[in-house]
View 1 (spheres, rainbow, N blue to C red):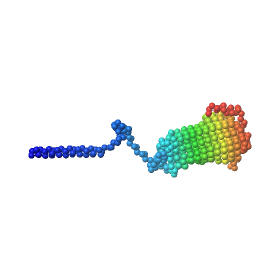
View 2 (cartoon, one colour):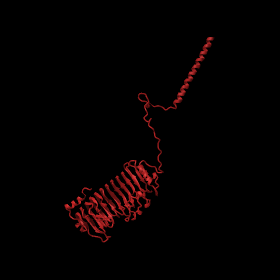
View 3 (cartoon, rainbow, N blue to C red):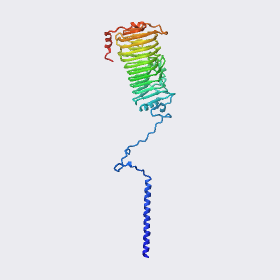
View 4 (cartoon, rainbow, N blue to C red):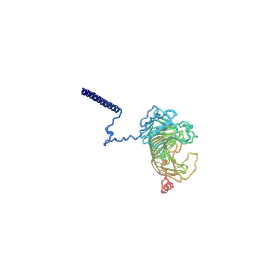
Length: 466
């Protein structure tokens, strides 16, 4: 009986231990399962080939907090289009939108192939501004709206009285569009305002194209290129009244490798002005008038050095202009003009179709001086049409004569609106040859025959300067 009781005790003790062990195992597994639900799964690729954890290359690199995108108003900016309206411009023609244009320019300058957009149907008042490079290549200023300069002289800062929109150090750059650049310059045209202001000016810029736009009513010069190269101007319109003084259409200075083509220019001064330091210039298919024609010069003012070479002006139509195609230099200057061709020129009611003037003076009287910019290798070929004052005027220096001047196929008749001027050609101290047909016939006797001594005189003054 005692043995049976001990057996029962051992049985219940065994069962109790078994139940305790089973409960403990279940408890541990439950905790493990709970913890595993909150741990990220580790993939096999997190381990190296030797079984150790591979280092995470981004583990030690700080990740910057993303900057908020700038807010430019209701006009979103595409990846390469920088609309000035997106930069705060009002486009009402009254508010000053200069800062918006400058901000758009600076942003676009950092993006290759960017477009600064001046949208159509808006007018933007822009005060004198500098748009500066260098920028990423192939930057475009798309002018489809209207840019307006301050109309009142007093609104211009005293420090910015020489250019309105000034492009500096830009390369591979294009201005294009269907819009207009309006200088609103009438207040500047009074004799009391003696500044020389350019509406659009390029300085030290290269591979520049200006096409399709219209530039009107500049305070003075409409479009200027200074110390630049690789310039192309195509299919633009320049327009200001005949009474607007010094409003040159296109002005070139210290600039080379230029093509100006297929454009209409009317202004109060030279349609195209080619100044010192210019070479390899090609001007063709231009309608000019009103204005003072196509000019090389004035050169050599205040005894300065002037060097101009390799100029071709052809297929030009001039109507009601002061001159047709001309070279003008001041007395006392030094340097040279050489290798210049004017060909296929049509003139209608032009006062002086053909001019070389080495006694140029913009005052009532200028001091007589012996030295002059030497002029050589100038060809006038196929100049036809009507004149109102004098057909040809070649007035060369007494001490430095013009040499290598060719007059070929010149046919000029008095216009019906003539002023009773000179019917005869004037050639003073000019040497070269003429070739028929020549009308008036006095052209055939105009030029002197060259000699070695004459050529030597012209070269000896300036052969080492340019």
